[in-house]
Length: 383
Ligand code: SF4
Image 1 (tube, rainbow, N blue to C red):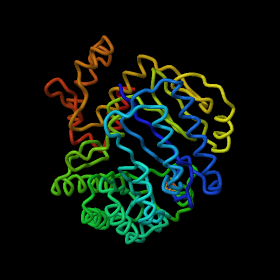
Image 2: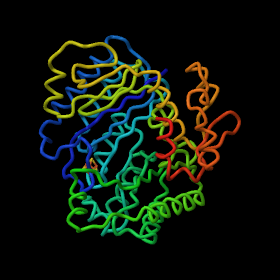
Image 3: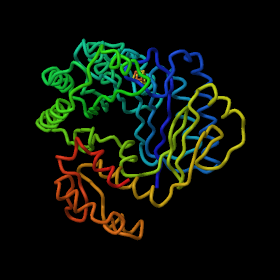
């Protein structure tokens, strides 16, 4: 099995109002040291064996704040310790306001061949509420610069379920990004996380909780509009033009193995699930402490456990059901675990099928369109 590599970059210029990701706004001075630590962690994790990989994903945080030479340094370290299978997909998340033509050309020359821009909305009042630091015109420019730098394979993120957002303003954002002809779109429903400014605004009445029925209507509108524009709805929150599905995220959704590197990253490989320590300064110190616990762990891993059979079964179901066109191969499940899905979850599939939330076709289990927006309620039944 070839690996996917996730590399977390925990730096942002400003924390957005809804964000609870592992990112820091005052540690930008650490970037060079941090890149060195990621390279050292790559060496530790590999443990002297050059395993095959097929994707790399720089996520964050804001990876596009890293100087191009640090991206090149990390990619060179990957190639010292791992072996690419074919041409690997190498994605970098980017904030529209952080890139210019020279930067994009430099990261493309370093090996990045896919971008993911956090656009979030085309509506100024929504971007302001989310405390994004760019406006939509900047996102349009970023897309033009990406294409000019040869980075024509890119994703745009949008958020729906935003307080104050209407069906009409959501349509406006969708139409504005569709005009940019992105090969891939990720649409996420806003969740208001504990400890974020947005949660405080909710508590003090500055914003109202978004109406879940409106969010469901916004999701349905997106499904219709994107189908009309030739996008395949291949995962619950992801749409792509044919051939532009995200290979890295497909590893997650096909329940494949991936290594998580960098502060706070999660990994799943060799029968182990783990998380790297979150604080960047501690991460750098822990990596520098030397030694190596053995593949797939590094000295910066804060927590890990062997994956039990029950956990593996749940993971297989709730990741693969997310793939709306592929679903879950029932014979492969039985072959892998020695028991059929019905034997493990007695009556669950029949009950969900009675409610028209799943269906079995040609030996595969799929969510029905009615379940797409309620998928967590289906997944809960398999946990
Ligand atoms: S840019 Fe992304 S990671 Fe950074 S604060 Fe905003 S939402 Fe969080």
